[in-house]
Length: 329
Ligand code: ASP
Image (cartoon, rainbow, N blue to C red; front, side, top):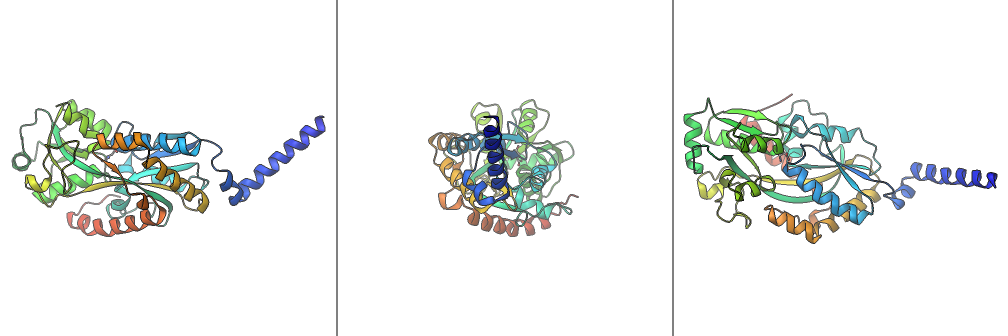
């Protein structure tokens, strides 16, 4: 009996070993344990909000828990760096946003190549940004904000989530359009930045509607404009930057999912399918709608569409960032 059990244990270990060594067997059984989704910014912020909704829906489809881990800091560059050091087995993935396309230009010594060092799983959503301020900040319109910032450039503060964050990019566009530099206050995510805006410790910022909508609706912060070509139905009274007088300031944030380079194709495809299922989930669609964003079309939630779009975005932002002239090491 003892011998039988031992043989069974050896057989099981052999099968497991073979599965680990053979990506095809490993992929066929995938996933057999929880998956970690790295988030490059603090908990409670917009990227984190999208990640948690997605993790829940993908977990239900995959039959395994998807655990969110916030690896915040350095403008969102720490989490991708960590992914390059993670096993390419499908158990560590990353959600990231437009910062994957701006970091290669912004950072002189970026330790990863967004196009070559990852497997691309698919795009997730596109989300507008809003230019917002603490409730008692004097300007009431975008035009007034521009005038106020010009007149008070030495005392105005702008919150962002570090160089490479969407809030940094939007601030960069604002300041280069207006032609002034104000003091920036970097956070590990716009979740904590929002807390300070609510507390009046910083003056203004630009952040995704996924983080600002409820505070705007609750009258807790001021809003000046939406940074995309069209208004959003969840904030119908908020003008676009074009309508409010700054047509040059247009930015739409997108999110994508990544796996370590070398993750078996079957696993990347399984994750991509799961992403597509999650984006059809009624709860995800409803919550996204409430927060002013919507899931990407199914055909764009694929590895090839993601890679192509990332490449186009890198090419689009490089000259704009170079012209603005901000770099980090
Ligand atoms: N979305 C924010 C940014 O890039 C960061 C965050 O998600 O907390 O500015």
